[in-house]
Image (cartoon, rainbow, N blue to C red):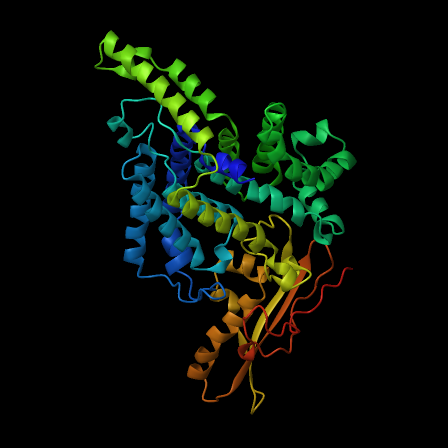
Length: 473
């Protein structure tokens, strides 16, 4: 068992795929940062809104001055270029990870599973050897037979697999199987080319059950050499359908997932293919024929010695391998267990919002707000004040405020000092009337309209009676 684990994690592999993926990922992130610039992300979503909704436990993350935010944005742009060319790649990956993650942790309504995956990939890139080829640094190496530990590729495969695996688990819940959510998604394909190719009833079945089968099987299809071509075809169909027909709010994520399939291929084969594309003389530029012949023989012998050494000592662990294995084990366990924390908090994470973030529960809810009113009532005089809540919130915040009802507690506590400042009375309570249509059910109250939100706690383990149960009608 230990010998298998060591081979799995530390067998020397060709770094071509990892290095090529660094370039691919960097290009996608460069595009993403430019898109942020065009939409003026730092003002529209961070510095502009009057009220922000923090993540529970991360209330200390707040936006800095707009000028500093724009500098951070520019540094993010530079970091993506450094990642692409492989210049000070680890530092650039660290900078990008911190900056990009900060950009969406400022406000919980900005959360997106795609952003979370990007953060995790950029975090992993800090620690793997993705710059030993196709980079400025690689000019220091004459040899084309550099090898890196296998875990460098496995950790990226693991991260890419998480959305599929937990997406399948999420779809086994009643919110997918016993609501009209698949039907609501199907409505998006009306008047498209698919209507003429696939009967409506069959297409609805494909959305409902095909998505589950796909999410559960796609990683295994890609890992198996015999079924990899089938997996690639299915992945292309799935992501292109999602990005171009079913959804209009997932940006570049489908294309990123398509290009990420390169991680499932054999790196040695990719390396050989790239070599064939390049002029052979460029591999050993500045060397004569005898030097090239000697170098190739030395590289071949080094590879054989490395493989033999690995086979003879596969049970023997050095300190670096032990520490690496420990951290990888903790990393894998955390990301396998943390998305399941909702079982400790609620039986319906989409409705209550508890445990739904950072859990890969993608496209599992549709909450359409049908009524949204905020009132402040003085406890001593019963004087009532209507608050025009929409003048305080951005369109994105209004769209996503009901994703987690604890946002309403933060909203109430934001209004409380403003009410005390503008009126001579003290001791107010803030109540919110919020009605939503959830996954096709009839409009219903989301929270108790009499709950004094100012006195409630955002702790996920606190009393949640103020969140009304879902009526499946």
